[in-house]
Image 1 (cartoon, helix red, strand yellow):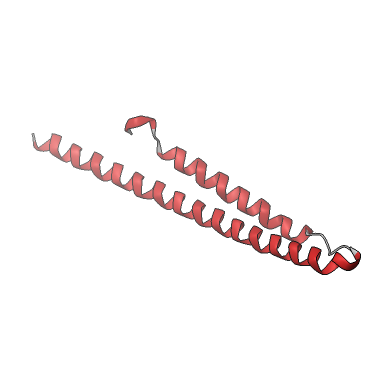
Image 2 (cartoon, rainbow, N blue to C red):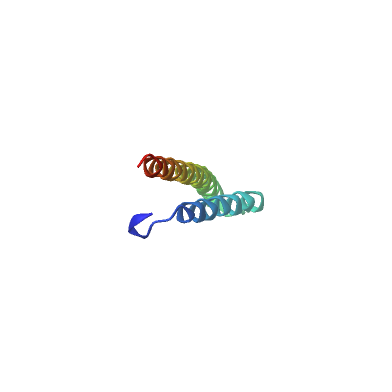
Length: 94
């Protein structure tokens, strides 16, 4: 492909994103319990819950981005294959 871009680049990106999402998701089971912070316990608990919600969204976004990168790689590969076949057909016709 032109411009130094290769389909393998999208596959690597998809793999990195998927791996990151899986690792973050694996941390969910290791979330700390709410510590006894005296009068601040409720606030600390609320902050930890909000952090958990944000991390869940990060995991979902990374997994979605991995899926889109993989789909993009497949589309680029298909377009390249079709273009190659079309050029081969044109050469044979000449």
